[in-house]
Length: 271
Ligand SMILES: Nc1ncnc2c1ncn2[C@@H]1O[C@H](COP(=O)(O)OP(=O)(O)OP(=O)(O)O)[C@@H](O)[C@H]1O
Ligand SMILES: [Mg+2]
Image (cartoon, rainbow, N blue to C red; front, side):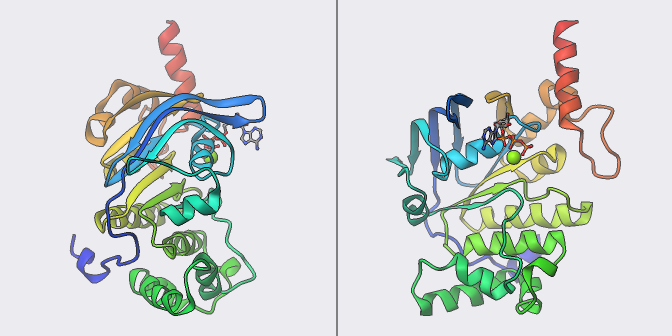
């Protein structure tokens, strides 16, 4: 793609990171959502698909230290710390569900907060790089984040996470609530970040489009992995085709209502 060269995505870590998760369990108090999960995020873009309530956000929260976890999580062969600030220092950044920007602050101020861990001079350099990586945000540098469109806000959220120069970027449903064109743009950004060397672990419900940009994928249902593999093969798998790319897909967005998909899959199993 031509525009790789125009906006090279300099932000991000130098060494390509590898996350290996084995026997991961996590939940809320006594309520266990994830049970004995095994998955990997290798250099490139890995997507985790699944319906509402499957445990996708819970997975990213557990990996980011926002909730306790059990099991092994190796980041480049070393046990990932448990506290969020230590996880961030190791080179892992999360773009949370719903973006969670500071709406009353400008784009630049939001980016500054993303880089609060780095010294001032380096922070300024990274903001400049963020504006090179996301030219649309340079034009909006002084706009209050809360007044931007959903897609623009998502871009700010991604740029803010990149301010930590992460080696692993975790994205929680970056396309949620966006118009189809914006969905394409955000997914293309995720792809370019991965191509530039930051390993990306992305949670999505936009099955078709996410698999089109990803290298590998997992399908999470009710806290367990039910399918996995290279994105191209997964897109052709029975689980995905019958459950997620079924006939009732929304022609406007190309997405399938994932809850319906799971219901259909259950029906198919019992008949
Ligand atoms: N803070 C919480 N306390 C208790 N239960 C929670 C909490 N957050 C999520 N859950 C429960 O954990 C399960 C998984 O939720 P999670 O948010 O991980 O799903 P998800 O796959 O991200 O769904 P969505 O696509 O709707 O974002 C759900 O049953 C949910 O009700
Ligand atoms: Mg979620």
